[in-house]
Length: 244
Image 1 (cartoon, one colour):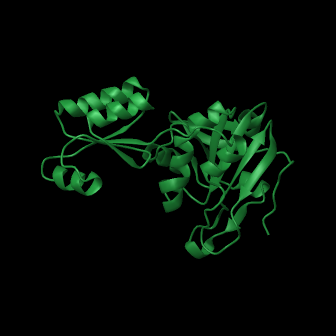
Image 2: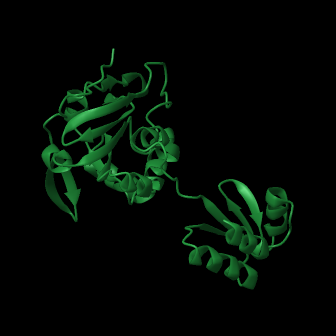
């Protein structure tokens, strides 16, 4: 049975990291001493849940973690540094420190090393997250010991709710646009002026009407969505931002 390590120091481990085509040693003392650190550990780089949800959401919520006093967010996996570096390039991970626990020493020391030989993985980390303060584990969220790869408690939102229950999450904004559209340019400028980060999805003429019609019931660009809700075109967005 997997045991919580709350109240205990993290294992003393030196990680071998490859940076700028050179080898570098990174110690747990460097990573944790004198800091408040959020850690999430997962079974493997490039695996579905890890790539689609676990890592991207921690990266997305990084500003909220920083505002709540978290100095760094670490992603630990029993993979070598080359794999972790390539995964970082492939993922939304600019706010995350990728830790290659290639030999599984840290994971073993945390009591989270499990056998996934049935999947051809060998020894890997069980999925968990934790808050570490000055090298001591303050809180752990360990996934239930169920078949498969449960993902219920080690997510970024659960972690942030523990650290700062009233923290404001960044808004998720998407602009469906048309190349050369002045109304689209206006909508994006309005968002920039208000400090919103957004994803721009330009649609070509062949699919734009069908996509926008299916998504919003409107055929014209732009169509702006904020936190999963349709705001509408540039004029509607201007009214929305004025009232916010």
